[in-house]
Image (cartoon, rainbow, N blue to C red; front, side, top):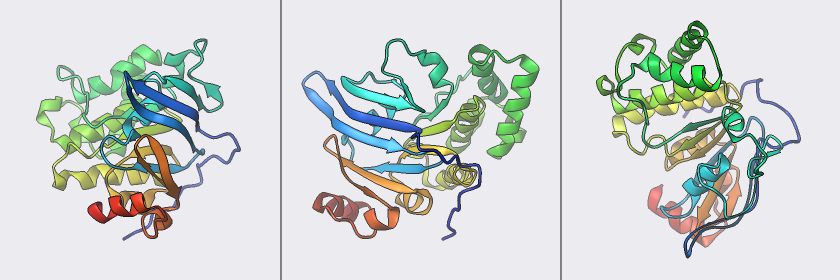
Length: 256
């Protein structure tokens, strides 16, 4: 397996890109997150693993307030995005998000999908938006698909378009919520390769994933969650190769 080495564009700073403090999230009587303390440093790739229902996707969605935390705080580049005074729309332009489902507009071409948010949220002119979109389509290997509609693309191609759309907003960091879980196995590799390239370029990434090979190869740190808490975290070779907690060992025995 080829290791992924980080590019020099990773930022060195003491201010974490993401810092979650005492985060709790409840849906009615269901406590999904139970006092999470979590951080992602600038230029770091953190892979969050765990069984279904462990709270990992809810944690990710709280980071850009797609879910409203019940208590606790979420700091993004030093700004408390749980503060009612924070301009959430402005902050979200700095946080790229890629979901399990591709969420592309079916009535727009690939190019249209990539330029719409740029023009509305970033206030870019059409020509500049198209230039940025084409650059990012080339980055994900889909330059020739700019005039295609989502229905004409495979699932893997649609997910790469979704990544290119997020990159077109020039985010400081990327959040991935199990980006390959909806794909046929043979389509997973192309999406993971795009993510590996982002890691090589020093992009800050928080990745909820069930792809243990990706976590081992690309992650700077692996975080194992279960029951709404962080059970164990550390370097991939430690958490995946020599887990210290029995719950981690039990989970990995079923997925590795």
